[in-house]
Image (cartoon, rainbow over all chains, first blue to last red; front, top):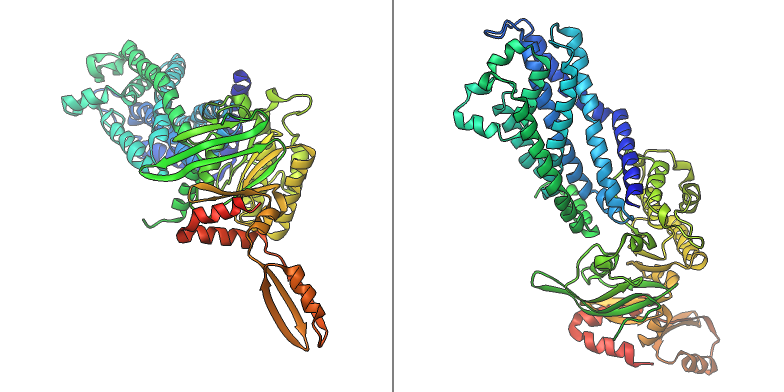
Length: 281
Length: 308
């Protein structure tokens, strides 16, 4: 019965993903974020990065791509869970036998699949506009494992935020803001070594920095490694940190989701509906 | 009192407390298989709380609750499959169409089908029942409130439930949709032997649908009987109206038969447009709730239970 519900959940997630791809709302989100990223790279296409001889798009693209992926994997599920516990989607799942299993399986599929259009929207124009982005074809293999590991590390964080926030309006405070702050200190827009030592330590506790490092190791030539901390790609450390987040996430998340589902009731949905029509509080 | 085995719902001394406010203090009732029971009561009386406890969506503070033989607080997924809940949606699944959504939801009931209760109800049949055939492939986002409610009903009955919960099912329905919904309920009760517990503010609806009416006021069940009996017991008197010599008269009496006999026997001009109106469930309900709210709850409740 559980396996049956998981299969239905996978189909549910796929349906949601396809419906999202067809909606102008989701399309404009993908195009807007990709437009910002590629636009920035294009404006600075002739800038040479100090000491490396590489052009800025080559150096910045992997980091920005990592930042976008983490952003999408945290904010996407956080908003979607926060909204769906208010609008009754979750309650519906709860009213159906094994429906919660299906619902959460669907969420995993939906948000994992959403990586693809987001990544493609950045990569395709970048490869058309800029040269020397991928130093060695084996980098594609590195991208795959970094993204998969990053997905396992960050998706549970996003779902946890969505499960814990009291209302949709609070996702900005508890989801968006921390991710923006982390992006600022994780070497996404400028080298992490430019920051104070303790900030570097904080940044290295979270997946964002390691996603960026992993992506740079995939795209950039080995000659660039001198610009990284310890003159190394620190592949094993990357695996260890992202892996630890993934394991912790997998252990903690089910309890958080169960707690969220247990609290779900019709009156809670009705109250959220009242609140949504009441803008001034 | 120990739970009676053939009762679909059995509630003993149910209590609910939010913070330091008691919402339910000692609710007792039971529902037999196949019954349609309506739970009435003023806003804030605890109707929704009661129904959510029975649905397994809310923990209770104290009391013994059995629904289909299980405690809803710890009920199994198999129990879920045997119950149906009509939820009030407002924004969910906006990008889906009724057909894809019903196919998806119905799938979860497949492992729980039996030969006498095949589950789920086929999507095409369900769309027919709730009158959404023409809208089956339209985005739910484009639906009116009434159309959305039809979809809510479809999702509530898709698992061919043995017990169905309806919390204010026709709020926001136009009269035609309401009539059609009543037909759906009759069909479920008569053809599928579904036990139904509903709440409503529409007393006319309660009178039409319910085999039995429970009135919840001040956290207790203050009345439990058929709509007809409740109206009779309210001892509100009967209103008699008539015209004589072009003049209109109204008189309220406890014994309408005797009054009318004497009225007609009176000499003088003939009586015309005679109308005898017995108190309706609405009169009985309003009287009871009013008496309750003016602090004479116990007296009112006693009056209701002692008369017969």
